[in-house]
Length: 274
Ligand code: E4P
Image (tube, rainbow, N blue to C red; front, side, top):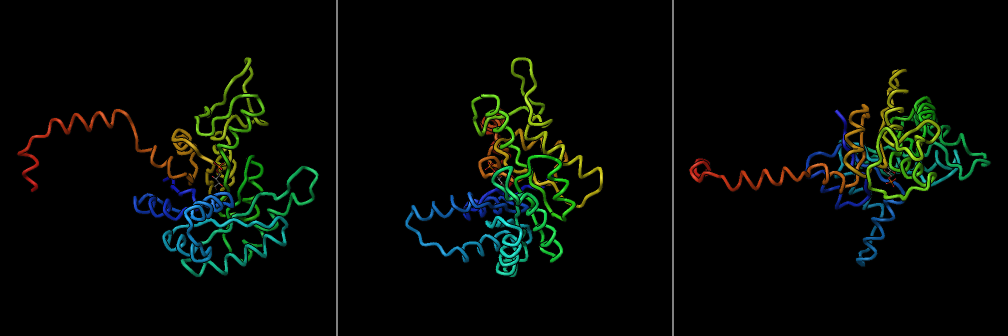
């Protein structure tokens, strides 16, 4: 069954998803953490980050929580990853260290291999990792070979990238067809990747072909059809913002059906259970 993670560092949102009984884990990243911290600062709340993260880990007890490194060299990521794991894993034994597949900022940087070096070292130290910022099945393959527990293809950002490259207005939450879009009779793509959910599917296939234990954690999902397509693709996990989880429950005909059934209630039937 596809697992649902909550893609948030906001404790209220995380609590909500767990209260609904459908959350199987949590993913955070530096931007999500900043959003959660800024929200509290705005409200004038004082935040002890260590206590705050401890609380997230306790709410998610029994399910994985990804905490991302911020260092950008292999040595830095290994040191920080080990430190984060030592500090936080004792709380609820559910910490996964999130490592970018490569921490370079541009093509000429020399740190392209640092992500897989860090994953390998952490996995050797029995620290589970979630390899993030995956945009090709090849990156997923190398992360899996290095020992990543999860690989996170970023579906929504692929759709953004293809749109921007083809001068199509980007609406981050708008559905982008899994099979791709055409413009001037040309199928739009990014080096053979036709959409974000196509990337997820290809990551699943490439790892499945060789029986890797690494799980595909579909990330950067911003609408319900992407989630559906991740389910079709065989992705092990879909990490979702709270609003996407909420949207998954909605349908106009469900509302209409409720109205109709409620209108027709036979009082004697209700009285049976009073
Ligand atoms: C989760 O692991 C990712 O960091 C997250 O899904 C990215 O989503 P975004 O592309 O909507 O920022």
